[in-house]
Image (cartoon, rainbow, N blue to C red):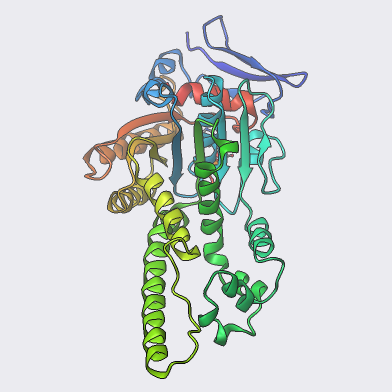
Length: 391
Ligand SMILES: Nc1ncnc2c1ncn2[C@@H]1O[C@H](COP(=O)(O)OP(=O)(O)OP(=O)(O)O)[C@@H](O)[C@H]1O
Protein backbone atom coordinates (compact mmCIF):
# COMPACT_ATOMS: atom_id res chain seq x y z
CA UNK A 1 0.00 0.00 0.00
CA UNK A 2 1.26 3.40 -0.86
CA UNK A 3 1.96 5.12 2.40
CA UNK A 4 1.37 8.78 2.78
CA UNK A 5 2.54 11.40 5.18
CA UNK A 6 0.51 14.01 6.89
CA UNK A 7 1.69 17.29 8.23
CA UNK A 8 -0.94 18.04 10.81
CA UNK A 9 -1.30 21.15 12.78
CA UNK A 10 -2.89 20.28 16.10
CA UNK A 11 -3.39 23.14 18.51
CA UNK A 12 -0.14 24.86 17.59
CA UNK A 13 1.67 21.57 17.47
CA UNK A 14 2.76 19.69 14.45
CA UNK A 15 2.88 16.01 14.06
CA UNK A 16 4.09 14.24 11.03
CA UNK A 17 3.22 10.63 10.87
CA UNK A 18 3.19 7.90 8.35
CA UNK A 19 -0.33 6.69 8.02
CA UNK A 20 -0.91 3.04 8.78
CA UNK A 21 1.77 3.15 11.49
CA UNK A 22 5.44 3.50 10.86
CA UNK A 23 8.67 4.79 12.22
CA UNK A 24 8.57 8.24 10.74
CA UNK A 25 6.96 10.20 13.52
CA UNK A 26 7.69 13.80 14.15
CA UNK A 27 5.91 15.86 16.69
CA UNK A 28 6.64 19.23 18.08
CA UNK A 29 5.96 22.64 19.20
CA UNK A 30 5.21 25.62 17.17
CA UNK A 31 5.67 25.10 13.48
CA UNK A 32 3.84 27.20 11.02
CA UNK A 33 3.15 24.35 8.66
CA UNK A 34 -0.49 24.49 7.79
CA UNK A 35 -2.07 21.07 7.53
CA UNK A 36 -0.20 20.26 4.33
CA UNK A 37 -0.54 16.78 3.01
CA UNK A 38 2.45 15.06 1.55
CA UNK A 39 0.59 12.90 -0.89
CA UNK A 40 1.04 9.29 -1.79
CA UNK A 41 1.86 10.37 -5.33
CA UNK A 42 4.95 12.17 -4.11
CA UNK A 43 5.86 9.87 -1.23
CA UNK A 44 4.95 6.26 -1.87
CA UNK A 45 6.33 3.83 0.70
CA UNK A 46 9.20 2.82 -1.57
CA UNK A 47 10.31 6.42 -1.90
CA UNK A 48 10.85 6.85 1.84
CA UNK A 49 13.95 4.76 1.36
CA UNK A 50 14.88 6.90 -1.61
CA UNK A 51 14.82 9.97 0.63
CA UNK A 52 17.91 8.56 2.32
CA UNK A 53 19.80 8.53 -0.97
CA UNK A 54 22.99 10.53 -1.13
CA UNK A 55 23.88 10.62 2.56
CA UNK A 56 25.65 13.81 3.58
CA UNK A 57 28.01 11.97 5.97
CA UNK A 58 26.79 14.21 8.74
CA UNK A 59 28.97 12.30 11.22
CA UNK A 60 32.01 13.92 9.63
CA UNK A 61 30.44 17.33 10.11
CA UNK A 62 29.38 16.90 13.71
CA UNK A 63 32.15 14.96 15.43
CA UNK A 64 34.97 17.45 15.94
CA UNK A 65 34.64 19.82 18.87
CA UNK A 66 36.82 22.44 17.26
CA UNK A 67 35.05 25.43 15.67
CA UNK A 68 33.78 24.84 12.12
CA UNK A 69 32.29 27.19 9.58
CA UNK A 70 29.72 26.11 7.00
CA UNK A 71 28.71 28.45 4.20
CA UNK A 72 25.63 27.48 2.20
CA UNK A 73 25.17 29.19 -1.11
CA UNK A 74 23.78 28.95 -4.60
CA UNK A 75 21.27 30.45 -7.00
CA UNK A 76 18.35 32.47 -5.64
CA UNK A 77 15.37 30.55 -4.32
CA UNK A 78 16.87 27.04 -4.42
CA UNK A 79 16.53 26.50 -0.66
CA UNK A 80 19.77 27.93 0.78
CA UNK A 81 18.07 29.34 3.88
CA UNK A 82 16.06 26.18 4.55
CA UNK A 83 19.17 24.01 4.23
CA UNK A 84 21.31 26.38 6.35
CA UNK A 85 18.66 26.73 9.06
CA UNK A 86 18.06 22.96 9.14
CA UNK A 87 21.82 22.35 9.46
CA UNK A 88 22.08 24.86 12.32
CA UNK A 89 19.17 23.18 14.13
CA UNK A 90 20.77 19.78 13.58
CA UNK A 91 24.13 20.92 14.99
CA UNK A 92 22.39 22.43 18.01
CA UNK A 93 20.41 19.21 18.53
CA UNK A 94 23.74 17.37 18.60
CA UNK A 95 25.00 19.59 21.39
CA UNK A 96 26.99 22.17 19.44
CA UNK A 97 26.42 25.75 20.53
CA UNK A 98 25.69 27.19 17.08
CA UNK A 99 25.28 30.54 15.37
CA UNK A 100 23.42 30.87 12.08
CA UNK A 101 24.10 34.07 10.16
CA UNK A 102 22.38 35.43 7.10
CA UNK A 103 24.60 37.53 4.86
CA UNK A 104 21.85 37.87 2.26
CA UNK A 105 20.48 41.44 2.27
CA UNK A 106 17.06 39.92 1.48
CA UNK A 107 16.95 37.98 4.75
CA UNK A 108 14.67 35.03 5.23
CA UNK A 109 15.97 33.48 8.47
CA UNK A 110 13.06 34.97 10.41
CA UNK A 111 10.61 33.49 7.89
CA UNK A 112 12.38 30.18 7.90
CA UNK A 113 12.41 29.86 11.70
CA UNK A 114 9.04 31.57 11.91
CA UNK A 115 10.43 33.81 14.65
CA UNK A 116 11.50 37.42 14.70
CA UNK A 117 15.28 37.31 14.24
CA UNK A 118 15.58 40.71 12.60
CA UNK A 119 17.36 43.81 13.89
CA UNK A 120 20.98 43.00 13.08
CA UNK A 121 21.77 41.51 16.49
CA UNK A 122 22.25 37.91 17.66
CA UNK A 123 18.96 36.51 18.88
CA UNK A 124 18.31 33.15 20.55
CA UNK A 125 16.23 30.73 18.48
CA UNK A 126 13.38 29.30 20.54
CA UNK A 127 12.52 25.61 20.52
CA UNK A 128 16.05 24.19 20.17
CA UNK A 129 17.88 22.25 22.90
CA UNK A 130 21.42 23.68 22.72
CA UNK A 131 22.11 27.35 22.34
CA UNK A 132 21.32 28.42 18.80
CA UNK A 133 21.70 32.10 18.01
CA UNK A 134 20.64 33.70 14.76
CA UNK A 135 21.75 36.93 13.14
CA UNK A 136 20.44 38.74 10.10
CA UNK A 137 23.23 41.13 9.19
CA UNK A 138 21.86 44.52 8.29
CA UNK A 139 23.96 47.09 6.40
CA UNK A 140 22.10 49.85 8.24
CA UNK A 141 23.37 48.61 11.59
CA UNK A 142 26.84 48.19 10.12
CA UNK A 143 26.84 51.81 8.95
CA UNK A 144 25.82 52.90 12.45
CA UNK A 145 28.72 50.90 13.91
CA UNK A 146 31.21 52.50 11.49
CA UNK A 147 29.90 55.94 12.38
CA UNK A 148 30.17 55.16 16.08
CA UNK A 149 33.74 53.90 15.63
CA UNK A 150 34.52 57.14 13.81
CA UNK A 151 33.52 58.89 17.05
CA UNK A 152 30.21 60.10 15.70
CA UNK A 153 32.13 62.46 13.48
CA UNK A 154 30.47 63.12 10.18
CA UNK A 155 33.60 64.04 8.22
CA UNK A 156 35.59 61.54 6.21
CA UNK A 157 38.77 63.57 6.79
CA UNK A 158 38.57 63.11 10.56
CA UNK A 159 37.87 59.43 10.15
CA UNK A 160 40.89 59.06 7.85
CA UNK A 161 42.97 61.12 10.28
CA UNK A 162 42.05 58.69 13.02
CA UNK A 163 43.19 55.83 10.77
CA UNK A 164 46.56 57.48 10.16
CA UNK A 165 45.57 58.38 6.60
CA UNK A 166 45.03 62.06 7.12
CA UNK A 167 47.67 62.95 4.53
CA UNK A 168 45.46 61.48 1.78
CA UNK A 169 42.34 63.12 3.02
CA UNK A 170 42.97 66.68 1.85
CA UNK A 171 40.81 66.24 -1.25
CA UNK A 172 38.10 64.45 0.71
CA UNK A 173 37.65 67.04 3.43
CA UNK A 174 34.19 68.04 2.26
CA UNK A 175 32.95 64.52 1.82
CA UNK A 176 30.35 63.39 4.26
CA UNK A 177 30.71 59.99 5.91
CA UNK A 178 27.04 59.26 5.27
CA UNK A 179 27.54 59.88 1.51
CA UNK A 180 30.62 57.70 1.44
CA UNK A 181 28.87 54.82 3.19
CA UNK A 182 25.90 55.14 0.88
CA UNK A 183 28.20 55.15 -2.16
CA UNK A 184 29.83 51.97 -0.84
CA UNK A 185 26.44 50.30 -0.49
CA UNK A 186 26.90 47.54 -3.07
CA UNK A 187 29.81 46.18 -1.04
CA UNK A 188 28.68 47.12 2.43
CA UNK A 189 26.77 43.86 2.98
CA UNK A 190 29.91 41.88 2.39
CA UNK A 191 32.00 44.23 4.55
CA UNK A 192 29.42 43.80 7.32
CA UNK A 193 29.63 40.03 6.95
CA UNK A 194 33.41 40.07 7.09
CA UNK A 195 33.45 42.22 10.18
CA UNK A 196 31.10 39.70 11.85
CA UNK A 197 33.36 36.80 10.85
CA UNK A 198 36.20 38.68 12.50
CA UNK A 199 34.21 39.13 15.67
CA UNK A 200 33.41 35.41 15.76
CA UNK A 201 37.08 34.55 15.17
CA UNK A 202 38.55 37.03 17.63
CA UNK A 203 36.12 37.73 20.39
CA UNK A 204 36.20 35.47 23.50
CA UNK A 205 32.47 36.02 23.97
CA UNK A 206 31.81 33.77 20.91
CA UNK A 207 34.51 31.19 21.56
CA UNK A 208 32.06 28.62 22.97
CA UNK A 209 30.18 28.47 19.66
CA UNK A 210 31.58 25.46 17.85
CA UNK A 211 29.51 25.68 14.67
CA UNK A 212 28.90 28.82 12.61
CA UNK A 213 26.54 28.39 9.66
CA UNK A 214 26.25 31.08 6.99
CA UNK A 215 23.16 31.46 4.86
CA UNK A 216 24.77 33.40 2.03
CA UNK A 217 23.30 35.66 -0.61
CA UNK A 218 22.81 34.46 -4.19
CA UNK A 219 25.98 33.60 -6.10
CA UNK A 220 27.32 37.03 -7.24
CA UNK A 221 27.22 38.56 -3.77
CA UNK A 222 28.80 35.51 -2.21
CA UNK A 223 31.73 35.45 -4.60
CA UNK A 224 32.31 39.12 -3.84
CA UNK A 225 32.24 38.33 -0.13
CA UNK A 226 34.84 35.59 -0.51
CA UNK A 227 37.18 37.65 -2.68
CA UNK A 228 36.85 40.86 -0.65
CA UNK A 229 39.51 40.07 1.97
CA UNK A 230 42.01 39.51 -0.87
CA UNK A 231 40.97 42.75 -2.50
CA UNK A 232 41.40 44.64 0.77
CA UNK A 233 44.62 42.89 1.47
CA UNK A 234 46.14 44.02 -1.82
CA UNK A 235 44.68 47.53 -1.50
CA UNK A 236 46.07 47.88 2.01
CA UNK A 237 49.45 46.65 0.80
CA UNK A 238 49.43 49.27 -1.95
CA UNK A 239 48.46 52.03 0.47
CA UNK A 240 51.12 50.90 2.96
CA UNK A 241 53.80 50.95 0.25
CA UNK A 242 52.67 54.36 -0.92
CA UNK A 243 52.72 55.63 2.63
CA UNK A 244 56.27 54.32 3.15
CA UNK A 245 57.41 56.03 -0.06
CA UNK A 246 55.89 59.33 1.04
CA UNK A 247 57.47 58.98 4.47
CA UNK A 248 60.87 58.27 2.89
CA UNK A 249 60.49 61.24 0.52
CA UNK A 250 59.48 63.45 3.44
CA UNK A 251 62.56 62.42 5.48
CA UNK A 252 64.82 63.08 2.47
CA UNK A 253 63.21 66.50 2.12
CA UNK A 254 63.74 67.12 5.83
CA UNK A 255 67.39 66.10 5.79
CA UNK A 256 68.09 68.36 2.78
CA UNK A 257 66.10 71.40 3.89
CA UNK A 258 66.23 70.86 7.65
CA UNK A 259 62.47 71.40 7.98
CA UNK A 260 60.44 69.88 10.72
CA UNK A 261 59.47 66.31 9.81
CA UNK A 262 55.73 66.32 9.35
CA UNK A 263 55.05 62.75 8.48
CA UNK A 264 56.00 60.22 11.10
CA UNK A 265 57.29 56.82 10.16
CA UNK A 266 54.64 54.37 11.22
CA UNK A 267 55.72 51.27 13.13
CA UNK A 268 54.56 47.78 12.22
CA UNK A 269 51.66 48.01 14.66
CA UNK A 270 49.90 50.86 12.88
CA UNK A 271 46.22 50.61 12.05
CA UNK A 272 46.80 49.61 8.43
CA UNK A 273 48.98 46.70 9.38
CA UNK A 274 46.42 45.62 11.93
CA UNK A 275 43.68 45.86 9.34
CA UNK A 276 45.78 43.83 6.92
CA UNK A 277 46.38 41.19 9.57
CA UNK A 278 42.65 40.96 10.29
CA UNK A 279 41.83 40.63 6.56
CA UNK A 280 44.36 37.83 6.33
CA UNK A 281 42.56 36.09 9.20
CA UNK A 282 39.23 36.23 7.36
CA UNK A 283 40.84 35.09 4.13
CA UNK A 284 42.45 32.17 5.94
CA UNK A 285 39.16 31.18 7.59
CA UNK A 286 37.46 31.02 4.18
CA UNK A 287 40.20 28.81 2.80
CA UNK A 288 41.02 26.56 5.73
CA UNK A 289 40.19 22.97 4.76
CA UNK A 290 40.15 21.91 8.42
CA UNK A 291 37.61 24.44 9.59
CA UNK A 292 35.56 25.61 6.65
CA UNK A 293 33.33 24.14 4.00
CA UNK A 294 31.15 25.75 1.37
CA UNK A 295 28.08 23.64 0.61
CA UNK A 296 26.51 24.36 -2.78
CA UNK A 297 22.72 24.18 -2.86
CA UNK A 298 20.96 23.68 -6.17
CA UNK A 299 17.77 22.34 -7.74
CA UNK A 300 17.47 19.83 -10.57
CA UNK A 301 17.15 22.22 -13.50
CA UNK A 302 19.70 22.83 -16.25
CA UNK A 303 19.92 26.54 -15.41
CA UNK A 304 20.58 25.94 -11.72
CA UNK A 305 23.11 23.20 -12.44
CA UNK A 306 25.01 25.40 -14.89
CA UNK A 307 25.18 28.18 -12.30
CA UNK A 308 26.31 25.71 -9.62
CA UNK A 309 29.03 24.48 -11.92
CA UNK A 310 30.28 28.04 -12.47
CA UNK A 311 30.05 28.71 -8.73
CA UNK A 312 32.19 25.68 -7.97
CA UNK A 313 34.76 26.76 -10.58
CA UNK A 314 34.98 30.20 -8.92
CA UNK A 315 35.23 28.73 -5.42
CA UNK A 316 37.96 26.38 -6.58
CA UNK A 317 39.83 29.34 -8.04
CA UNK A 318 39.52 31.11 -4.68
CA UNK A 319 40.70 27.91 -2.90
CA UNK A 320 37.52 27.71 -0.87
CA UNK A 321 36.92 24.09 0.24
CA UNK A 322 33.78 22.48 -1.27
CA UNK A 323 32.81 18.83 -0.72
CA UNK A 324 29.02 18.63 -0.84
CA UNK A 325 26.28 19.52 -3.30
CA UNK A 326 22.65 19.49 -2.17
CA UNK A 327 20.18 18.86 -4.98
CA UNK A 328 17.00 20.16 -3.38
CA UNK A 329 13.34 19.85 -4.34
CA UNK A 330 13.63 16.49 -6.08
CA UNK A 331 10.41 14.67 -6.84
CA UNK A 332 10.79 11.21 -5.33
CA UNK A 333 9.89 8.28 -7.61
CA UNK A 334 6.27 7.27 -7.68
CA UNK A 335 4.16 4.33 -8.77
CA UNK A 336 1.07 6.35 -9.59
CA UNK A 337 2.15 9.41 -11.49
CA UNK A 338 0.21 12.18 -13.17
CA UNK A 339 1.48 13.28 -16.58
CA UNK A 340 2.91 16.51 -15.19
CA UNK A 341 4.83 14.70 -12.44
CA UNK A 342 6.20 12.05 -14.75
CA UNK A 343 7.46 14.66 -17.24
CA UNK A 344 9.11 16.65 -14.43
CA UNK A 345 10.59 13.54 -12.89
CA UNK A 346 12.04 12.44 -16.23
CA UNK A 347 13.62 15.85 -16.67
CA UNK A 348 15.04 15.77 -13.13
CA UNK A 349 16.56 12.35 -13.76
CA UNK A 350 18.17 13.72 -16.93
CA UNK A 351 19.59 16.67 -14.95
CA UNK A 352 20.98 14.34 -12.26
CA UNK A 353 22.78 12.57 -15.12
CA UNK A 354 24.20 15.94 -16.22
CA UNK A 355 25.58 16.51 -12.70
CA UNK A 356 27.34 13.18 -12.85
CA UNK A 357 28.99 14.21 -16.12
CA UNK A 358 29.79 17.77 -15.09
CA UNK A 359 33.52 18.14 -14.52
CA UNK A 360 33.03 20.68 -11.72
CA UNK A 361 30.22 18.92 -9.86
CA UNK A 362 30.78 15.23 -10.39
CA UNK A 363 33.50 15.03 -7.72
CA UNK A 364 31.21 16.43 -4.99
CA UNK A 365 29.19 14.33 -2.58
CA UNK A 366 25.65 14.67 -3.91
CA UNK A 367 22.90 14.96 -1.29
CA UNK A 368 19.40 14.53 -2.64
CA UNK A 369 16.69 16.42 -0.80
CA UNK A 370 13.02 15.84 -1.64
CA UNK A 371 10.42 18.40 -2.58
CA UNK A 372 7.95 18.57 0.29
CA UNK A 373 4.44 19.73 -0.31
CA UNK A 374 4.42 22.14 2.60
CA UNK A 375 6.53 25.22 3.15
CA UNK A 376 9.42 24.60 5.53
CA UNK A 377 8.81 26.99 8.38
CA UNK A 378 9.49 26.73 12.09
CA UNK A 379 11.91 24.61 14.12
CA UNK A 380 9.92 21.32 13.88
CA UNK A 381 9.75 21.58 10.11
CA UNK A 382 13.46 22.42 9.94
CA UNK A 383 14.21 19.43 12.17
CA UNK A 384 12.21 17.26 9.80
CA UNK A 385 14.02 18.60 6.74
CA UNK A 386 17.36 18.35 8.54
CA UNK A 387 16.75 14.68 9.30
CA UNK A 388 16.20 14.04 5.58
CA UNK A 389 19.27 15.94 4.41
CA UNK A 390 21.87 15.76 7.16
CA UNK A 391 22.51 12.13 7.99
N1 LIG B 1 12.66 20.73 -0.30
C1 LIG B 1 11.71 21.64 -0.26
N2 LIG B 1 10.41 21.29 -0.33
C2 LIG B 1 9.43 22.21 -0.25
N3 LIG B 1 9.66 23.53 -0.15
C3 LIG B 1 10.93 23.95 -0.09
C4 LIG B 1 12.03 23.05 -0.13
N4 LIG B 1 13.19 23.75 -0.04
C5 LIG B 1 12.82 25.04 0.06
N5 LIG B 1 11.48 25.17 0.03
C6 LIG B 1 10.69 26.40 0.08
O1 LIG B 1 11.13 27.23 -1.01
C7 LIG B 1 11.12 28.60 -0.62
C8 LIG B 1 12.51 29.21 -0.81
O2 LIG B 1 13.37 28.55 0.09
P1 LIG B 1 14.61 29.30 0.78
O3 LIG B 1 14.17 30.62 1.33
O4 LIG B 1 15.22 28.33 1.69
O5 LIG B 1 15.49 29.53 -0.52
P2 LIG B 1 16.74 30.52 -0.72
O6 LIG B 1 17.62 29.89 -1.73
O7 LIG B 1 17.33 30.85 0.59
O8 LIG B 1 16.02 31.78 -1.32
P3 LIG B 1 16.64 33.27 -1.53
O9 LIG B 1 17.70 33.14 -2.58
O10 LIG B 1 15.44 34.04 -1.99
O11 LIG B 1 17.18 33.69 -0.19
C9 LIG B 1 10.63 28.63 0.83
O12 LIG B 1 9.26 28.87 0.84
C10 LIG B 1 10.93 27.24 1.35
O13 LIG B 1 10.05 26.83 2.38
